[in-house]
Length: 58
Image (cartoon, rainbow, N blue to C red):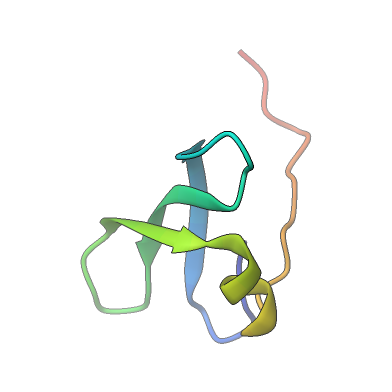
């Protein structure tokens, strides 16, 4: 999930079976990246929009 202000949140994994809480890596300009837990409903209510990048190749 990300927002237009340069704040980036990358999904890591689900923390519950209902997929309501997840672990993310979060970073903003001029700050360190950190692992944080968020409720996905709260992120959506704050304006974050989930995006999927489909160009990753192994």
